[in-house]
Image 1: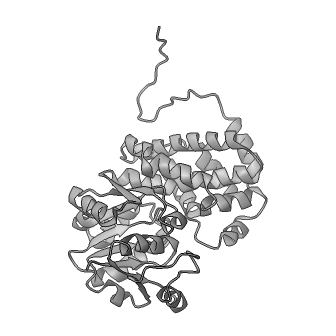
Image 2 (image 1 turned 60 degrees about the horizontal axis):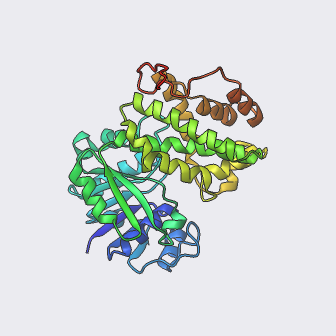
Image 3 (image 1 turned 45 degrees about the horizontal axis):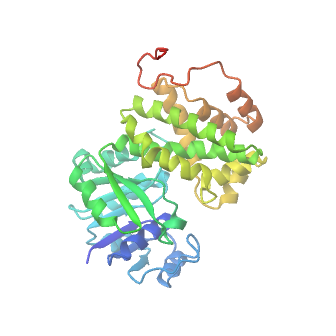
Length: 346
């Protein structure tokens, strides 16, 4: 029986554990807190995924060495700001032939690196051949209830991506492969910024028109930054791009959207984050993306205005006015660096 070590015991870790346990795999989750491990071992993660009975193949431990011992697959399902520290602690305990899967959707705040770059720094460049990013439009609350979902497994090594595809594939959990690790990582991380923005717009009482504009123009700036960093443009038209953007910007399952709603209603950032009661990845990602945009020389007006609201006391209404008052633009603006000509066709 395949043993999967799940480093993390939150909602997404638990939902993925259910996908694997339903395929008769043994899944052991690592929790920092004994009380959470006890809940899981009693058959329900009532803290993070309430109302869903866990498969008997799922157990939890607080001892990281026990969790990782002889696991053929290791899934890191922790917030992005915890990834490096837990990787350092875990790496000496992981089998040298184990497949490593990362499901965090964020960037490293201190270095501005993508998480695969963090992994390469700590595990070595060669270890990227067994590293996979799993991303896409996938709320834990729905995956846990076995609602049909599609995601993408990205790796520089096709065989490793296909291994993870086979590992997770089921009638209600479809997995595609993609060689574009850069694009999949950036799509998964940056959409959280736009979800914060659409949440703010909802909190201000705006409607569907505003949300559609925010998502569409948000995708344009995500694509600009991604392309400048080496991503494939087509990735942003896929599950890790527009797919994840849609689900995160429109659903109340989205922590980032819920946080944005509270900010739009007048709460401070600290109050809004506290109201969500879970990690809001988009807050840290906004800070990283704002710095990356300047480093890359990329215009990201929505990200910039969300940054000003979160960290520089700009009011949400002022941010909206700033965005709506920008100079006139051609919609098909430069994304790839090429010139766009105005051509009339008969």
